[in-house]
Length: 371
Image (cartoon, rainbow, N blue to C red; front, side, top):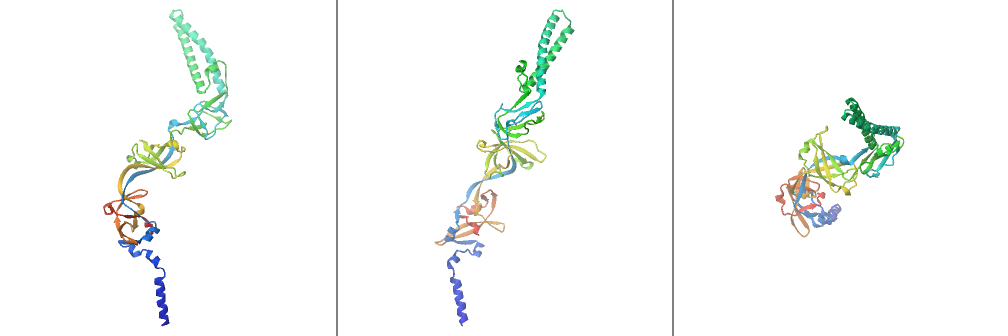
């Protein structure tokens, strides 16, 4: 008899141990049925929220990769027409230069020889010109033979061509021919920046010898930067000028930047990709560096569809459901589990194809993670 009393007392303690907590637990059987009841206290503690269907934009995109680049006219390699030894290289990578600024000085005895040749041909030219004019006058007056006239003409024009060639060579070497004619001969030539921009490469140092095939340094003007994207052949037919581009630099930031398609290439590369050139919006306020790797999405189409937030979708065994408020009382809400058919998806929203069933309904949009 004593054992019976102890057993009954144990049942009472189990039934009355924590009645408040029991009312807040959702019955697993209820979750798997069509109707689900949730207490209002639990609704608040789980930070649940109601929402409704809304119209959202869904984008059809082409995923691609590429780099930040500049147009060819904004990139310049500094080299020399005639080899020499570096005597001055005042720039470092990252230095800003202006067009026409001194970037290097070279020295070579060959520079002196060219100036000597120019002086010699200049002196000869004056004599040959006078002789040519004299022979022409004599020939016109039938005093001298045509042979003498033609020989004088040939000598003069041949030397004139040499004179013009040497003069142009001096100008390309940035040596003033007029100064040379006045006796100013220099063993050094200077190289100047062909464009304004930033130094991105320095390939030489003082004392090193460079030939005409060598690049001393590279200058890039970043006033106009753009995207060079590689789009696969299978996707290229959907790409058109003015389409929106969203891109990011994964190694530097997750921030999304905007651009638009400006040019679509007409040649398929060996890796079956086509170049797509994109213009960046508001590139002046971004610290982009040429050569940066980017990941981009080209928006080839956009449509507006009736949708729900992803947080409002309950998935079970490859089926999708929404919880619609059926009724409520002072203590709880009762939801109906309605099967839905989903369509397009983007980062936060999902298209609902059978949205008529959910029209004007209060739908649980937050707190479904507990189910």
